[in-house]
Image 1: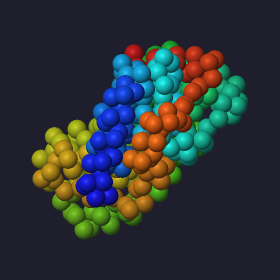
Image 2: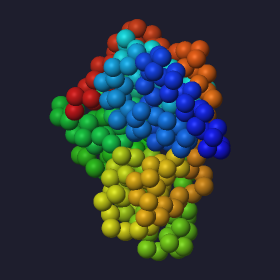
Image 3: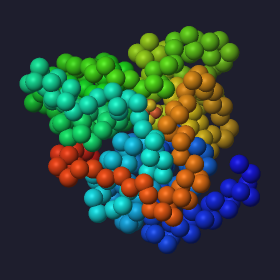
Length: 305
Ligand code: SF4
C-alpha cells in the first residue's frame, strides 16, 4: 500500500479510536501496517495482560478468534471487536470440550494445562492456561500434580516435557504453520548462512527444535536476538515477527527458515477492516456467561504466576 493511502487509513483509524475510546491490540504475526497502527503489539501472554489492564471502552483485537475471546473473558465490561470474524486458529479448533472431558475421565489425577490457543470452552475445562512464554513455569507451579494433560499443541507439549519432571499427556494438535517447517529447511538455510544462529518457536516439530541455538516464545526470541552479538539469524516462526525484529535490530539480518511460515488467518485483518469494525462496532466477540466464568479461573491462575 502506498504511503499516502496508509496515512489516510491511519488518520481515519486514529480519529475513530478517539471517538470510541478504543485501544488496538495486535499480535506479532499481523501484517506490518497493522502492527504499526496498534497501541500495543505483543505475544499471547502480553496481549492477555494488556486486555486485562486496559482502561479503554473498546478493544479492537487484531489477531485470531481465541485471542479476542480471552480479551472478552478478562475484560467483561469492555466491548471486544475482532475486525475479521473468520480469523480463526486451526490448532485451537483441534481440541473441543467434549473430547477433553473424555480425556479427563481417563486420567482423573491429571491437571489440565491448556495453551491459550484454545477455545473458551476448552479453557473452561482446564485447571490453568499457559502460553509459550510461561508453559514450563506454569507446569512447575503445580506441585500437587504428577501428571498433566497438555492441550492442544503436541509440539509445545513435547518441548515442555523435556524441561520439567512431570508426566505430560499430549493432545494430538499442532499449528499448521509452524509444524510445516522441516529439519531439511533448517539444514538448507544453514548451508547458505553458516554463521547464522537458528532461533525457533516451540510450536515447531521436536526435530526442528533440536537443530536450534535458541527455542522460545516470540517475546523470548526478540530478547535473545537483541542481546546476541551475532549478525545473522534463521527465524523459525511466523513471518510477521520479522517486522518487529528488523525494527528492533536494523543492523542484523533476519532469514525466514521457510517460506511456508505464513499463517493465513493472521493475515486476514487489514486496515479497511479495522475502519469498518470501528465504524459499525462489529463483529463483537462474546463468550457465554458460565463458560466465561470457568475460563476466567484458568486464565487468572496463569496471570497470577
Ligand atoms: S500461527 Fe498457528 S497457532 Fe498461531 S493462529 Fe496461526 S495456526 Fe493458530
